[in-house]
Image (cartoon, rainbow, N blue to C red; front, side):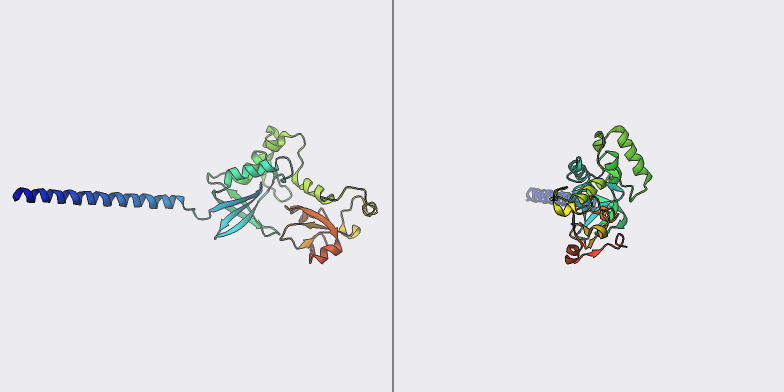
Length: 256
């Protein structure tokens, strides 16, 4: 009987020891899971990149809603330009699906937040685009000396788009599209023949210059208007009457 009781007691002790070890292991696993969740959670002022519109325009998820960001101080080639697709891919490779922080500068007339984007490793996306030859320093809207220096270095090293002998700046590309919008031949119609060959002022030519962005509610009388040059969508030319029929109002800058 004594031996039986001792054997039973040993079994009970072994059972409780195993149970205790199992509890400790589960507690350790739970702590590790919690630590991993904390490590994976975004820090304050960090937002996940959910879309890449083009090289210099991305979307972040902020407060559960998409927020469109226009990168401050840089201008990437348009999608129909040389290096436009490569610039978009460069941006995507660096930030898509990543948590980034931003330094907000302004909100543009299209409602986009104009900002610098800081990568998880601390690098500046705006600077990386210029440094690697995938963007121009947008001097019309930025006097940033670091961007100017990085562009000069990229030019000298013939990085990215600077490997071309005479790359066309995106603002000149957009201006060319405005002068000769898609679907309109450069010459050959009697209507165009009766109009000035080059007309900057819409009041003289009767033309209105439109940015085809969904959020655009204005028309421009001057195709060189700096607000019109900010358009990142396709552009077009219609008569002033047609622009008004679309319930657009004249730009307060170029209609003065």
